[in-house]
Amino acid sequence: MLGIHTKNLRGDLFGGLTAGVIALPLALAFGEASGAGPIAGLYGAIIVGFFAALFGGTGSQISGPTGPMVVVFAGVYATLNGSPELVFAVVVLAGIIQILFGVLRFGQYIRLVPYPVISGFMSGIGCIIVALQFSRLFGHEPEGGGTIPALAAIPGSIMDPNFVALALGLLTLLIVFKWPKTWGKFVPAPLAALVIGTVGSVVVGGAPILGDIPTGLPGFIMPSFSQDSLFIVVEAAFILAILGAIDSLLTSLVADNMTRTRHDSNRELIGQGIGNTVAGLFGGVPGAGATMRTAVNIRTGGLTKMSGMIHSLLLLAVVVSLGPLASQIPHAVLAGLLVKTGYDIIDFAYLKRAHKGPRWDLGLMVLVVFLTVFVDLITAVLAGVVMAALAFVKQIADAQLAALGDVTNQGLSVDLTAEEEALLKKAGNKVTLFDFGGPLSFGAAADVGHQVREKSKGKSAMVLDFSRVTHVDVSAARAMETIGSDAHSANKEVYVSGMNDEVRAMLKGLNNEYCLSHGDNFATRLDAIKDAVEFVVEEDSNAAASSANSTSEPSTA
Image (cartoon, rainbow, N blue to C red; front, side, top):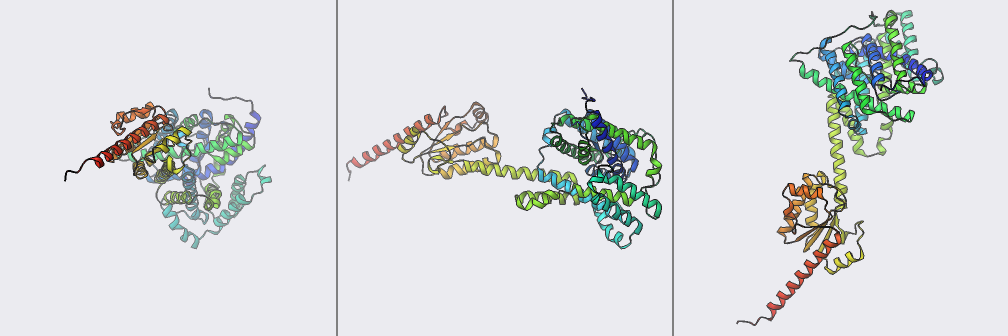
């Protein structure tokens, strides 16, 4: 059931060990940045990494603390004053929400977030990470939490640098950005920067370091919250759950492309939720699928769940035995690692080409970045999704309205038979045929009535062909009512063809059938045109007869 097997044990062993080596410095850095401490970052990497691999739906995925998750968690930690019972109640609740997402099969919907929105909030998170770590590169700790205080602290840090810390931070940045790829096959750049920077700090001295780090297994934390903190806990948990779900499923897509496999979105959400729930119970920083660690795992041979579990076991061995060595790591070195992480999260690939694409998408991405950095993540994502959805509805509505028209006069891409063309010609331009190119969205419904009214002026009858309309919503049904009412006021006859049972049921349910003059649904468009032309011809004959009678009547003068 869990899909554990050893057919790729050698590859999984190498992949898991390599991913674990890369995860070590990042876990320490994320833990420190979160406010909960480096050991909390390691606990999160161990627990989330193990259980997400065991129960998840992406075999090669490596999970653990990530930049987006840590940014939100750090804000939660600061807001709740570092109270473990409250802070980790958020993590546990976030995990439970993710499990519910998976059980309710929300995985496929979370993946529908538009790319400009994803790019925007990921880039915004990258900017936040860089801003939060900038002062630490100069040997200072920004006062207060959040992006604004971090940005405000930058000028003072630059004016009064700790030169040892600055040198170590710049050395770290140089290593992680310029480490040769051939060397990286043997020693990953983050690990090299961590070791070199720590040794340099021990030799020179003078830079702020992590200090004592506890070793051993984590203790159990009983989550709790008060009535006053309930809203904060629930809101933060929901943000973490959504963000972790999106982050993980995006990484799953990357893994699919690299391994030519297909992940199970809902099972992946359940695995991530279990991992975060257990992490919250034992004081671990929340996590998600980590793209860089997953890519490294795959490139070095990891393909199954075993690789993620091996990655976690390696980190567990470090926690049990290497705490005293980790205590000597300088803050500036971890800040350098996180600056590189933030830089990698910013979507420069899209920004370089964005001017060649739709301006609206670029504007949406910039808006989401701004809201992410200066407001909050949930506002950014919700605003981005709503605006993207409205823009999409507008595009679809414009296309639907463009497809709607008088077939007889506009030469639309509708194939009329020779008999239909002859009948319409016989009507003398007094019958107009409207073809609905497909289902009518609520975006187009508001203008459908106006379009039909304007394009049918001067006509005696209209034929509405519903052959390609599979369904209508309430807005479209009301638009049909408008068309019928306008036609009745203008003494026009309305003929309908090709309407399926679902559409008729919708109109009948809303009492809109009266908009159809004859109450009939002709099986074919030809039948509707025949009746419409017959009506027009008869009307013309009656009008001619009436005119002749009035002319032949003797004068009574």
